[in-house]
Image 1 (cartoon, one colour):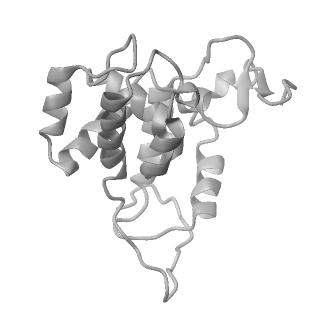
Image 2: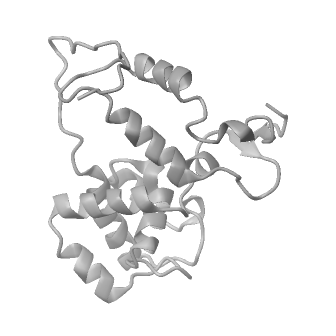
Length: 193
């Protein structure tokens, strides 16, 4: 239950909308990715350069999450870090998990990963230089903390959640002291934002 007095605008699903649990899509995609890697070993490269990537993209539930999934599976030791190849023992252990436990393990690895930085990996925002000065763990903890403020079982409007995030925690992805120090750029044009 919400404890800080933060007010979210409630969302009421329409009569034709069906709510479903968040599911196990990431774990299912991990299994699909591991089967793909087994059949199509790749050199160390980003997913955009993989051979037969269009075949993989047709079979996963969340194609934009593939780079993150590769990173998490490497952190878990399921994929080798020097190439896109399986670590047999770790892969067997992963496949031995239930779908729910595999999903939980992936989410826990994401939650604890200092190496995966959403701000650096996704979107059209870049930074000058190759190093991102933000702390991805702090950003994740701030976001999860705000999600905990949503009353259990309640639906809230995304716009309301984002408004609260902007108004209550504008520095959730980077410390307030860094707001002036960062030089953010548009990745497509290179212009300062």
